[in-house]
Image (cartoon, rainbow, N blue to C red; front, side, top):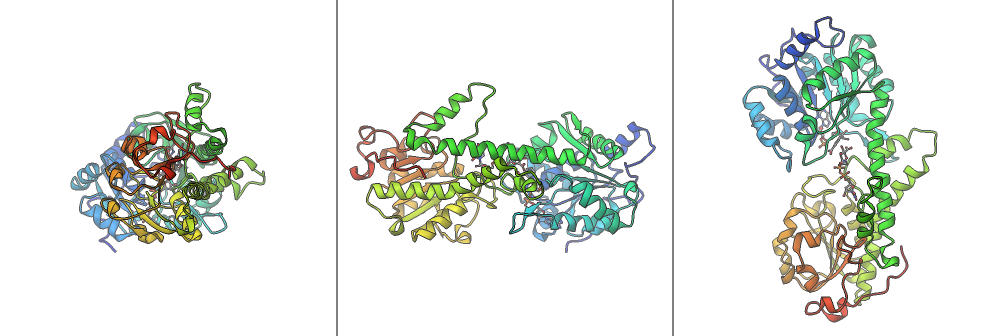
Length: 495
Ligand SMILES: NC(=O)C1=CN([C@@H]2O[C@H](COP(=O)(O)OP(=O)(O)OC[C@H]3O[C@@H](n4cnc5c(N)ncnc54)[C@H](O)[C@@H]3O)[C@@H](O)[C@H]2O)C=CC1
Ligand SMILES: CC(=O)N[C@@H]1[C@@H](OP(=O)(O)OP(=O)(O)OC[C@H]2O[C@@H](n3ccc(=O)[nH]c3=O)[C@H](O)[C@@H]2O)O[C@H](C(=O)O)[C@@H](O)[C@@H]1O
């Protein structure tokens, strides 16, 4: 355990915002001069940026994380989160100015803080039921130090009803306080990796919903100071929780539609990507991009926050999950077909998967489509390797290969699942001719014509430039790969 928070950082005599009769300007002054200490629980990809922006706004933040290496990194004025512009600088600045510190000691931080911000993950158990264990563990820490007037803010995405039915009663029973002695509001993170600081500082209106009117008021005041955008108070915490989950369900269903339409490209012998992008000329049409699946610990999980609890059948949301979850196996089927067309059995093939994380530049593999692709390939008996700049493919059952070493290897196929920027450096011209399945229509941007000149490309859903999945005509591909490997194949049955 790291050292406990110091008195210099947090003042035990501070006031709370919930139920205070101080004038509003005085409340704002106390908040922004560090006299209302803040604790942020969970210092991950979103928690660390949030803690840093809270520190920038209030000057008095203690971050709590169960992972001692996370805490040590922050104590050394560094950020453990990669690919987040401005974060390392902001963390260094705030820690060095004594405005942000970190600890593994949740209960001690809770005793000193008057605003408690929860930003730990909410995952699913094996039966796809929301797993609130981590949020409840943090609630236990907070309850150990909860005092009348404190405000608890949940930013972790939660199943609608969680603040009202689970978190509020949990905090009250563990702290011994009456429910109306402390505030509780749900204020969702409308943020995205790679732009977290910008988003938190106010890219979008900040939604605030309390379990009572005073919670909504107090949390609105906090975010009015923290965010440059407007605060959007909603009727209650459950509505705010629903807003966040609805945003995620919209995205999941929309991507499922894009994937369903994308799969038609083979039968129609067109680029459905071109068709989708052109349809989006109309402002009322906002089709998303087809791809090899939906990953990360957010979008694939949020639909289950409703599916697991609602009596309504929610057939569309459920089907969208199924469509998106099926995409990795569609990728494997398409690859099998493309290899068969050049006379190679997938079960006998050696395949390299490019990009294991769920998004380029984000060190996260939970629910990543690449894991499904790897599993599907292994099931066929193929020899599977992986390349990723952020994670070790060996941890996911694939032989790890460095990007620079690819020319020394011999593969029958490559599958691009996640187009990390560094893949722009792959020496395609030096690789033996092979089948390259581009799951994201990213090869053109990453490598120009270098891939098509030498390899047989299959682009899932086709390319934005109008090229159908199986690529250009034989004539356009001349001069590169084995002629047998570049012939256009039959579309075959759509899988
Ligand atoms: N990553 C994203 O793009 C977005 C995430 N969110 C939501 O934000 C929440 C957090 O997500 P991330 O920061 O991405 O997660 P993350 O997995 O990057 O980080 C979570 C952190 O919480 C720590 N932790 C686990 N148990 C803890 C405990 N009992 N006490 C204190 N710390 C604990 C972990 O050690 C880790 O550092 C989730 O509910 C997620 O749905 C919302 C919008 C965007
Ligand atoms: C619109 C948007 O950018 N949503 C964010 C989303 O963040 P996340 O990091 O999960 O990224 P995402 O862009 O939704 O991608 C999720 C997955 O879906 C895939 N994906 C995404 C968009 C698309 O058109 N097609 C597609 O296949 C991605 O490749 C990825 O595997 O989920 C976050 C969350 O709700 O936690 C949310 O705050 C973020 O705003």
